[in-house]
Length: 232
Image (tube, rainbow, N blue to C red):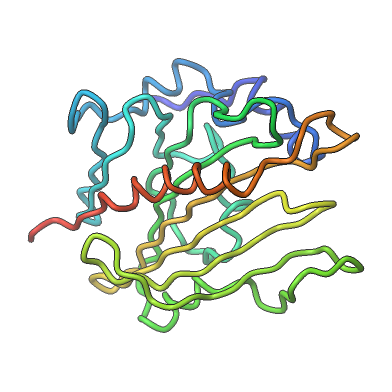
């Protein structure tokens, strides 16, 4: 396996997204070679594939047609999307939706990130699910960022601390559902990130609806529901 630089299309797409006016799904803007080099060979079924991390002894399944890689910047921008991750957090895998399911909307990408922060205690791990320090709810006068920390959720028999983070420019441009759990002295983290840009006259397309956001979120949650730890 060798490293291949991000494609020009991918770089341009994310530059546009940072300026709040992309017209394509950046998760689909990868080179075929980068995708094929990183895709695991294990097939869970004809419709899905399985990722297994032998170091941290965890697996999950994802749709076979989705993009997959173990490295950031090929199909993703982890540090931009997962703002509460610690500096010592290690990205282990990321999957992204391959096509825009709502091409006439402001949707620009959906990602599930799996990362691990070694040598952490339970309290510090749970804090990663909280919004960044000093973040206040956004208002019309100060539409910066907002977030919230929710109760503990149990998914696939695993207890997770759950939080929500949002990033704003003119509108909300990124939503991140954060799930963390402590295992074997390490903090296991999953980010379900949905990105969009601001619509209206600026972009000429309609804003993505709450119903459409929920549909995308459900697809990410279906992947999270397959998470399982090795028996030993």
